Amino acid sequence: MSTAMTVVDFHGDALECATRDGQHYVALRPMCDALGIETRAQLAKLKTKAWSTMSMIDMVAEDGKSRLMSMLSLDSVPMWLATIEPSNEVQS
Image 1: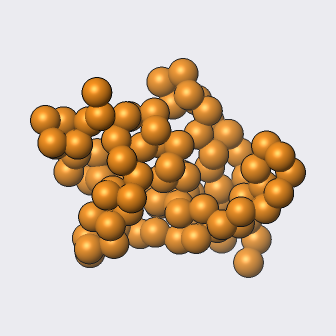
Image 2 (image 1 turned 60 degrees about the vertical axis):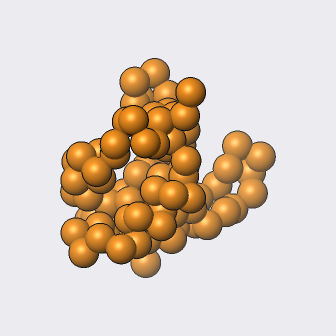
């Protein structure tokens, strides 16, 4: 399977993105960090949603090591953002 990596700006934060076989994905952890929400809770929530398309993709970290990352399809991002309840999930 062919995977192309890129970094995009998300409100001043760099997010790791991947394109695999024409499908675009964004790394979940950096996006959660940028939004100030807990990644594990979001990952657990996304796994229960029929509309959520997730994939584990090997990405090369800044230290040059390859790591599997939880990636969310770009098409799923708007629905995911709509499920975030700021009063319950945003860390102070």
